[in-house]
Amino acid sequence: DASSDGPAHDLSNPRAPQRSTVSAADDHARADDQRHQSTGVNRRKYGWLQVTSGNGGVNGTWGVPQLLDGDGNIVQLRGMSMFWSNTGWEAEKFWTRDVVRILVEDWHVDVIRAAVGVEEDGGYINDSAANWDRLSVVVEACLEFGVYVIVDWHTHYAETYQDRAESFFFYVATLWGEYPNLIYEVYNEPITRDWSDVIKPYAEAVMPIIRDYSKKNLILIGTPFYSQDINVAAQDPIDDDNLAYVFHFYAATHKEPYRTKVEKALNLGVPVFCSEFGTVMATGDGALDTESTAEWMTFMNDRNISWLNWAVSDRDETTSILKEDIYTPYFDVAWPDSDLTDSGLLIRDYIWEDRYYED
Image (cartoon, rainbow, N blue to C red):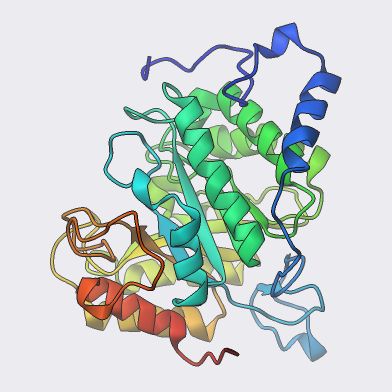
């Protein structure tokens, strides 16, 4: 049930037998079978991503840690996070190829975050088959349309489900680890967990499993207290050549003191990645705070911090980008402005800002 941490040897392929009954070769063969069905067509915009410390560039002009493309140029990814994948949480209908296509072709996102719910009702622990199927659709669509995809273990208690996380990321890495599109987020938002005693050891256990099959891809790790105390994590970094530290904020709740935490982390030389933010209160609701959102955007854009907005949803929450129940699963055109919430309109414009695209 949702309160347990799952079978000790659970294999993340929801239709596969227990890991204890199959060999590693069988696991790899199964991964190969699905990989050969991939629709990826190598239309990636930036190629392999690589983080770097702040003392690089010509005469150290980078200043702060940066994300680089395959040619060594500074890049900033902008995109959208899917809502929780959980069955029965009203957002499953968005985990489709059509939604990915609209986000890529109309919104011009660089990256989409697949937030795989873990222990909550309807999440991966108690409905792995349906959640895996949704993830596969989104990942394959991102490969097809040539954008990055963050596979996010979306939980506040990842260390409780470490066995499941290890098997989940094993299977993700064996299936898609050869593609530069893949970014791994191994812990969404720790709450009261200590960085050095809990979060860091968890990451150090999961990351080698990914690196066995996905040596070059970017990995993201959540930081203490809802991924806000990034300055704490920066004081005791993890030894990995391509790791960024996650920071989350909600504009109406988190303001200047939280930007100070990010500055401290950057000054300590750790790369920062904002894999989730909202334009409203931390509850996901409340009034749109355009002023605070603008301040955050200036802050992140000035430092080339990649960001994704929460969330692709039509739930009755002001952080949703679509109006309540407006979405129909049968469409082949972009969402009209009249279907977007105030937050949706604002974020789409921020994604579009200062960007020019070929027809």
